[in-house]
Length: 217
Image (cartoon, rainbow, N blue to C red; front, side, top):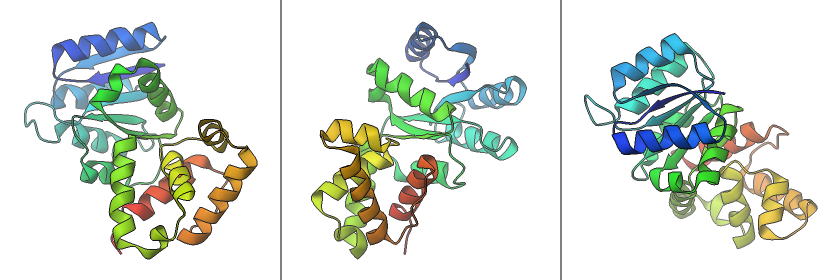
């Protein structure tokens, strides 16, 4: 699997290259600026891009904007964005086209190698990998503003958080130590309360939930 990596801090970039190579990824390019990232994505057509939000020369959201432009030119290009802090605007921009193959992780997650590599693989496969802190902030904000979310039971909120991170029913059942059938019932109740149509497509289901949570009514 070919990866284009964009990170301006040399030590972190070098560490990510070594980590990904150790897990069998091929590093097509490891760059440190927005212009370099734009060229690499256009010329190398990687299987997945791992991109720091803030890159030179602007050090604002250069990395994110380069990735979004590349996705417009090559729809569905898998992009995993790394950020120092939870920035809901960035998460919303990344999810806006609803086509999947996106992730948003805090840089702290990089230090858990298995979790980080799982996120890269999930995004490369067209799935979604959202940082739990991003999901928690979206959930807490929406619960204060939207009555339907407030109608969820504590267990349903827990299941929704895990769903929104991109986990399957089987994975949620294993984490909560309940049956998969119980999780299926919870997810059905969640979609009913949120007025969302149930879909067999896990990625589409997650994106629908996130779009609902982060939509201004």
